[in-house]
Image 1: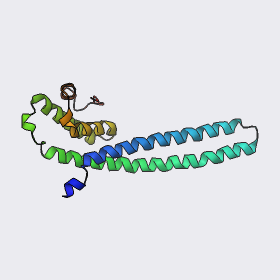
Image 2: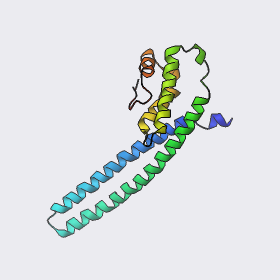
Image 3: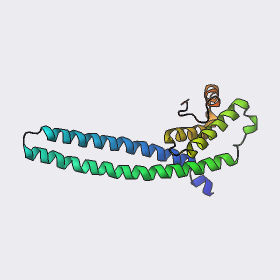
Image 4: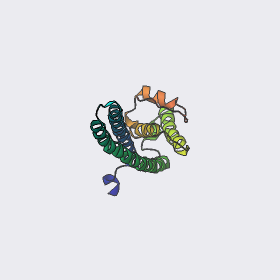
Length: 163
């Protein structure tokens, strides 16, 4: 009963990676806005205008710094969930794997190898791990083209085909 109510750690890892990317975009936007305000402050005619622009830039920079700290925590949680998901996915092959055939079995194993290889690195690529986990979870809907691409992908690949 608890298995049906609790999402799979791979889903949690994918969602954490998505949050991390959204936070990164928000952080870069805030930093760009603050930088633009500071740049305008340098060319402002009146010192009062320049002071006001710098005062507007400060909270933006502070918020960007807060997001950076949150990104670190989210990234750490992502790696923990990805490791947990990998452990669960490698314990047992999915139901019906006996009828898969060589190409699909190789593609599935390659995705798991990619996750394992990335998680062993000092600086894993979260996008690669998330995409590999997403492929593993969606193995039932793989097309022949997707299986062929995944089966020929190396375990130390820096990018994975999307479809």
